[in-house]
Length: 147
Image (tube, helix red, strand yellow):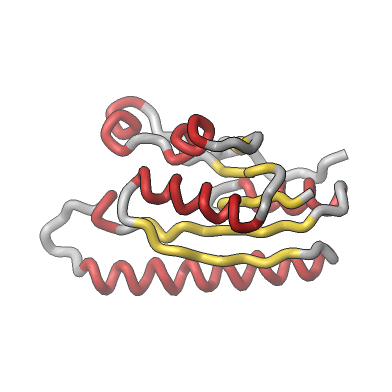
């Protein structure tokens, strides 16, 4: 079994626990979203923010790669850029297909109301378009060991 995970929210620890308990490989993918999706302030520097987001993604990837190694799980972490909410979902699903995943594990941001209406839901796009089963981990759910 291979699980693909989008490690942006609370899902990485759950996915790692699931992979370890099932002796599965774990292939993680983190989409770096275009900051223009969220920041509509004229004074911000898009290229500087993109650089900062890329640095944070690289640090997150290394941290999660180390956790995978420490757990003794076969796995790796990759990152990719996306320009729209739909593009993020497409990139996540493409990564899952490339990894030949059996399960897609995703964290949810927990957007509600107008923000969700305007921004959409990456998880919802993935659930609707994925041929794989999708395990959603809501924001705010503390990680725990699976029994």
